[in-house]
Length: 143
Image (cartoon, rainbow, N blue to C red; front, side, top):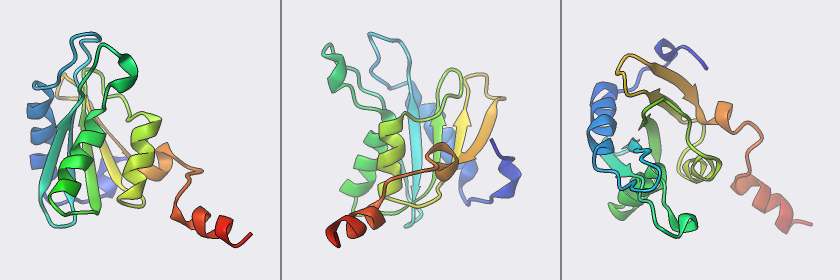
């Protein structure tokens, strides 16, 4: 993981607070693993999401994708920063990494643990180095 001082993001403190605050609202009755996410849209707005579990586990939706849904529902389609708050500071799952890539390129990501002292910084490309994006779709259509 990179040093978080390498990137300056306006509203970072607000993003961290929003992710931590919304985490308490997660619906996680099966795993008890609550996740709160805050994304910063290019429009300067903060959008939040929580994980929502389901008894049919495959229908569970991650916090990151819910935050993206709130952002897109507001008409914004570009993410400039992400904060994910969990009990232990884990990274977004693979599906969420791919969804984030749809709405930004090398997005800075902060991973926040419950102890409020553990903050890790990384980027989307570090988490998804050999990613699939729209540029591959163009290459496929030319074959």
